[in-house]
Length: 296
Image (cartoon, rainbow, N blue to C red; front, side, top):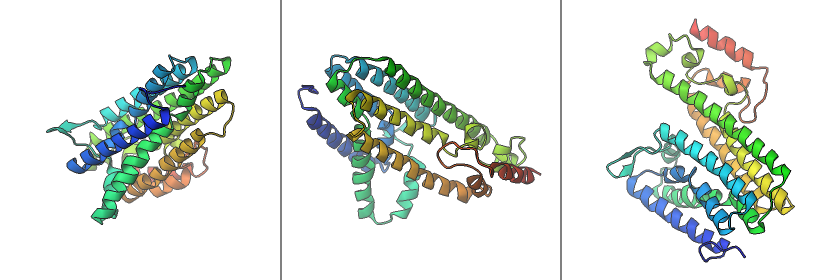
């Protein structure tokens, strides 16, 4: 029987979820910054997976899954860092995801906001981050042996990891070039993306959120990988990866609402590209024509 620091797995995870939720809520309330879970998003899952793997005496499959998730976490943590996500001043983290600011402006009742903060931002999200590691936990409990099929799962996982890396790097380079110019100079730029105000080339030609798509797909691979070893796809992993998809997909509506209000051509971009899943869309050429007209 696998135990985690002397506790049964479920008991241990309940204690962890409650403790982290309370910490994030209290610290977030005290600093008026609710992005505490955002800072844990890329770190907490792989820490949990290492705990599972250690408790299983380094079960081979659990170890490989944990290594993949650790690479995912380190990359995402670095990406969050270079965007200022860990900015720290006077003893507090200063950066807050702008999407929380949008929701805060719409939830004006202090009681409702506090309920949203504790139950959704803290408890729900930390429970979700715990749940998506479920496949690693069950594989660790099974102490599964490696098979040639594991190489396929590793390869597909790394494919989506590289896809997300490319999408994030492209967006970071674009944003750096854009904000290096004054608003007046942006309209005179030779880069049509800067003129439009948003990135629409490379992977963003096929999906408006290729990084979100690749992020979800990595966890789909983890779910399928675990399901393969326990012999059934009907497990809790399906619930949590489905909830992750719904959460990430839903967040694109907030992002796009903000972009649509700031950039006149964004609505045409929406009509010419896929929101989430990468696709070839016929309307993309009409959008490019509109961008060229704006440049002239």
